[in-house]
Length: 479
Image (tube, rainbow, N blue to C red; front, side, top):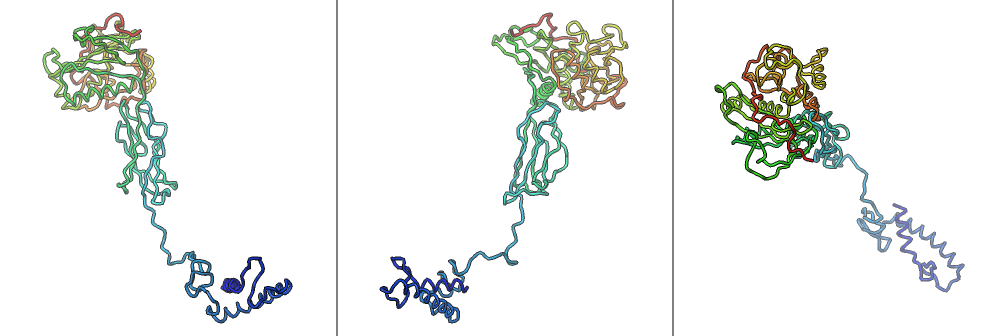
């Protein structure tokens, strides 16, 4: 405090004249420079005395002093200028810093991706949590869940944010159908913050179009569309577009008098619920097959029919969608293109027409390789239905071996799922016109619980009673 009071006194006693000379009390302006210099020295001494007097005698000796609490240079009251600062060091009485509270949840990985069905995305979903000061928050619980597409994530338990405030999944594998996939991240303890969603599309260029030949319910329509989405995830290549009009089609395969040109990409299936002639319910549930082929052997147009007497029981048992999926496989070419004619020579020892019990096998290389992953060391063929029953034999897997697999010939009451194995997908690759995604297969094994001694339910279809036989040459192939 002595220094600042000295300065105040110095400024009051002295002033600077217009000519830059130092002026003091009782000095004659006409004095010599030497005297002025001497006086200046003497006055400095006096100033020191005055300062001492001010220190000892209080502020009243100085005219114009800020006094107690003044805002000038010499006040003792802690003025805002030079007499005392407001920035005091922290004390124990200062309030503690605020407790961190999660206020922000943001995605820091890609939120839009794509991958093949049944495969993992390239960037695993990751989020960051920040507090009210925008600082990362560690130790916050993040919940990840699959909300669309039926894929899987790991881990399936909640994830806790790390020191950088981040939580990340170890993997996200897309579902087995060509539908939108999504994973959502949220904070269970901070529901008001909303969520972050990560979306993914299933890669592939194969498209199936459906035209209904009869009235179908909303649930039946959904079953057809779900089956189409599943096969679109299995076959991934683009096929040649086809131009046609419906008046050119056979009466048994979607014919009308409509002459409107249709550009088809890649497969068209006519579907309906009809009366299939047979002795009654519980016999032939459905029938399906191709109508027209491209030059590469792929199906252009096919048809599926479901027995009106059996459809109610299929729906009640939860099996209608699986039945549609099975029939659609035949339209694409499973079983229907295995022999020559009309397809390839992929069957050894056929049981049709009159050799029940022979060892009928499928010899396609991809299906055989897939079969060996399930049954190592097995011979060079996949067991095929060898019952010599028209519409079933030589066109399905052998049920005593494959049990409830999708392309076995019959359904057993009580089944709720028919898994599509890698063998079935491999057999499509063997047809030569399709590029397939093996990762779209369902888990499947030859566990004894899946093996049946003989078919125990009604046949799924009688595709060999064709609604439209395949023509000997490809039709409507675009140039």
